[in-house]
Image 1 (cartoon, rainbow, N blue to C red):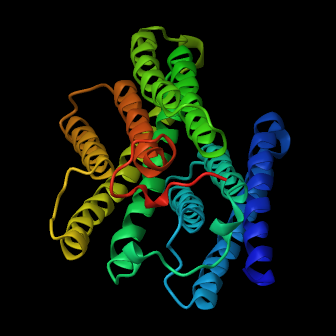
Image 2 (cartoon, helix red, strand yellow):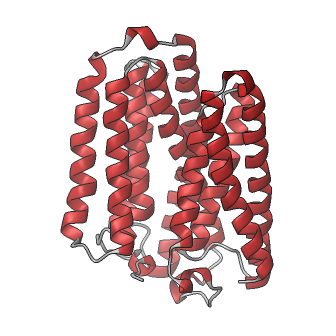
Length: 331
C-alpha cells in the first residue's frame, strides 16, 4: 500500500474521530453549539473526500476494482456511512445523528486498522473473486449495509426524542453485545459457540427487553417534532438501502449461477441476506400502512441493524461457515 493511500486513509480515520468529539462537545456548549456542529460537519466532509481519493488511489495501484477483501469493504462501509450522513443531514437539517455516524465510521476504521497486514496489502484475488460480477454485486450490498446502520442509529435517536430512555438503554446494550461478539470472533480464540450465543442470544434477549420497556416513558424529555424527524430519517435510509440490497441479492444469484451452477444454494450468508431483506420489507410494510407506532418501528430498525451486522461480518467471525467463508481469517 502506497504512502499516499496510508496518508489519505489515516486522514479520513482521524477526521471521523475528530468529528465525533466535536459533535459531542456541541451538546455541552450551548453558546457555540451551531459553530461546533458546522466545524464537525466540515471535518467529516474532509474525511469523506480523503477517503474517496484513497479508495480511487487503491484501485489504480491494484489495477482492479478496490473491493476484494474485508479491509477494502470496511473502507467502503465507512465511506458510505459518512456520505449517507452528509446526505440526510442536508435533506433534513438534522445534526445529532452526526456523532453516531462519525463514531460508527471511526469504529470501523479502527477495526480495519487492527486487521492482519495481509488484509491491508494489495494481493492477487482469490479465484472465487476473479469475476466481473464482483464490482456489480458487492458495492450495492456495502452501501445498503451503511444505510441500514444509519437507519438503526436514527431509530435510537427517535427513542431518545420520544422519551423512551430505558428502552434506548436496552437497545444500546444489545448493539454493544453484538459488536463485542464480532470483535472477539475476529481477534481472539474464544469458542464460536460462546460467540454465537453472545450475538444471537444477546440480540434476542435485548430486543425483547427493549420492547417490554417501551411503555416506560420519560414525559419530561419528549420532543415530538424531533422524534417524527428521526422516524422519517430512518425510513428514508431504508428506502435507499432496500433496493440496493435487492440488487445485491439478485446479482449475487446471477454470480452464483455463473460460478457454481446454481442461483441459490441456501448458503448461510445467502440465507441471512434473505432474512435481512425480509426484515426490511416488513419494516416498509408496517411503516407505509402505519401498523406500528414509531417507537416500535424504531426498534424494528435496530433489529435490522443487528441482522445487517450479522450478515456483513458475523459469518466471517462467528464460525457459521458456508461458501462465503473464504473471507474468514484469524491474525
